Image (tube, rainbow, N blue to C red; front, side, top):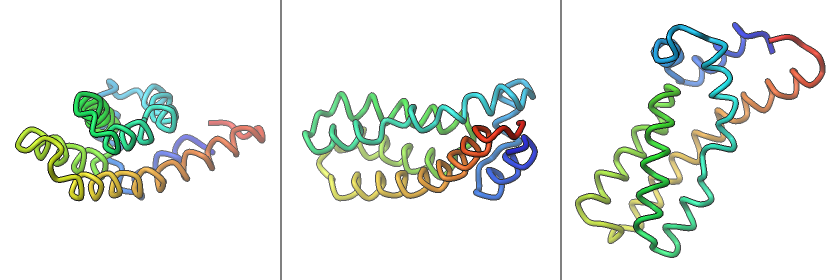
Amino acid sequence: MEKKVLLQRLEDADVDVSDAVKRFMGNEELYLKFIRKLPESLNLDKLEASLQSEKESDFYHYMHDLKGLAGNLGLLQIYDPANAALVEYRSSGLRNLKKMYGLLSEIRDYSQKVMAILEEDFENDETGSEL
């Protein structure tokens, strides 16, 4: 997929591309390099496993990393629920699992939307189109 098309599709999916690219010193190529690593960087299965086993330190670690990743990449619809989960955790630990699972579900739903765009980009790149 052409670079401008990919950036626009991400923007259309409510990714704050312009602000995120600023964090990458205006380097769109560098930003795209990092956002393309999103599927292997999310760790949502590990995050969910830490909730299921109620391993608080693992949960905090994965959620904190996710919040930072999402913030840097302009993924505000992941950043906001990740931040809300950390606020909840700091106030009551994992006592409100229902809320934590709800926030994780929001994160998972939105991440699938973004990953579908990235997957399409990857498929197009594999067929020889240029970035």
